[in-house]
Length: 620
Image (tube, rainbow, N blue to C red; front, top):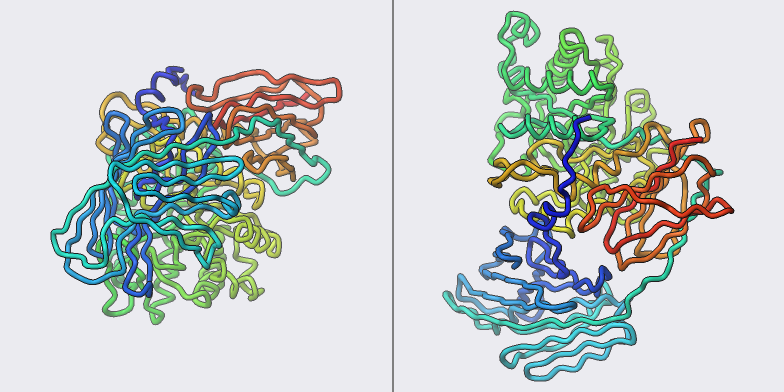
């Protein structure tokens, strides 16, 4: 692999955002960190309709928003329902931030009011005392406090959220009589304090119960940008990528129904986009990866009359059932040509996110029939390629796979269960996906891994420390709960890039790895083909996943410390060679450090604040 220059601290200081206030791209603050520990709350802009008939609250994918940083200041511009708002957030001291709000109305109408709100989780603030004065509001519990100081007096009130049980503090920005062109500003400081938890965490691996195979970290390679080649080269040369997913440019492969696409390709008229995608598949396969082929854009002839894709968003295109055989033949032709002329037999095929229609839309029953019918077609053509069950847009739509699970005729043609990790990855939902995989006795794949599907609209968010930490937290949780065969990053190209500079999203300077890159590289450092092991963590702010093999005596324990500095005692790894410990945090980029080995075989590892730490034992 190419040697990467270790100029990490200077790069992270210059390009990553090591702010203590967590600012989401849509303007919500999720808390302020003190020594790495989060003093948790969540702000939002809320528009309350008359008589509280409905409440709009800002959140992920609910607004068209922009995000950037200038001179250390997080700047958000967004809006909804005819109300525009801007926000500037600056860290001013330990545990303290200043917030500047600007807001305006684009229309004249009656509402209950427009508010800036603090959502206080019941787990931390059930017994909070809230004292509201003209220019000051204080929120205090036995273990934490929040003080809000305003330049001018404000109107405020407190309500209980019936759905969550949380306490919501409402601060009025505009009253119910909205007027077109109406404007306002609000400036205040947030000062937090609280007990900092440095207690040692115990991480115990249960090596007696090896679970499912983890081949390793994977990636998506859907080609979209002239910047893609340099990013792909860098990632493949510096990360152990175990699994790949590429696009089938279907509408470019066979734009005209009556033209034989294989004959056209053999005559030297293979479309450039198709050729590039096939060559990408060939490159990944040459590195020993299984390759998934997924289709987004269908040709017009394959669609029901009147179906047409608009720009962006959810296409929701329905295929013409009267042409099913022609459709299956076209898809099979592509996979046959890929095998015969590029030497790549696809491990699996899918229509991307057909549960919501990006771009082909299936009902759950249509998805089950598609698996049976295309699966049989591929088998009849001599292909070992099977179909992904699901490849869903996110974890919440797991009901989409139920008909196929209940139809045994689909089972011989299912390669793996797949979902995308953009939304809904709570423990209960992830356990349902894991159960589906076990029921069918097929692997589970995270076909697209990351946390914010809209992030390409505000790409500076990729440099935020919070974004990187949330991403590796999610992967660690998925690895522990779902035991996937692989998690495929979206993407290892210039789209949602792990790199920055050299024109990527308009960035300047040399191309360099971000903190996200180092975290993904560290996850990918897991030795190949280990089994997932159950484990426990004694602290809910420390997420962990473990892999190992009794045959090779290789083990890997991944630890994400979401709080202040502490030590971890790691139990359950059989004694062997001196373990390697990697640390990625605000200053370290997969830096090697040491663990203390005790006589009983346990390890003590230092966990810096907000750090990702990996312990790898390479065998005896």
